[in-house]
Image (tube, rainbow, N blue to C red; front, side):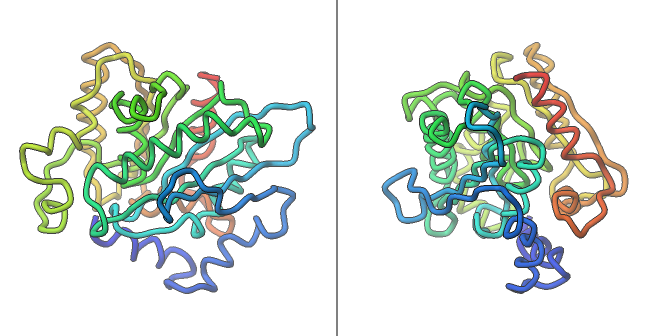
Length: 282
């Protein structure tokens, strides 16, 4: 997972450049999607989010996706991901993309607590942007999928915000590290001590009552192993919860997001699979 941020930056015009990001996010600048930037969702300076609202009638209330970006819990910014807000807008979803605290400034579980705070804010305030809080979904990629899955499965995060996971209709995770044991020094420091590891493993909190989950993984992923998805699927099925999954041939870890970017030809129908899944739990 150490190379995720570099790899994603390379994906954007094969270089970590401002120009690459600008090109990836270009459609948002010229679309009729309304973008509201830097909304405060908590007292810390990093606790800000962006809201992407597709054009729609003033009487229509739209479904909502809270999307958490990856970056190994260390890197990334909501400003990099306008392309995510834009593609969900094309599907008729309001999208919320929140920044969250990063290691080494903080350690686990602070970034998950930020995620819960952002989801709770969305539930309480999205109606002000013509979003339907009763059609609230959560998604994420890589470390962001881990954050979103924990917010969805571990009740105490949303309970600390005065809510419960029942406000989430469904979760869709892309290449999430849901159940692993840290072995690199920085991750040991981030998630340790070892007795704390079960608290960062999503499987620990599965009881069959969590919102439905869609788990997606690329067969060429060498960064986050398939075992993470398999273990989570097995636990959900053992508890008689609701889970669906898909493995995409020829897609690697970063490629799971390439289909979100307008100038890349997707090797897999990832957006369609996510929105089809959400549609069934509206």
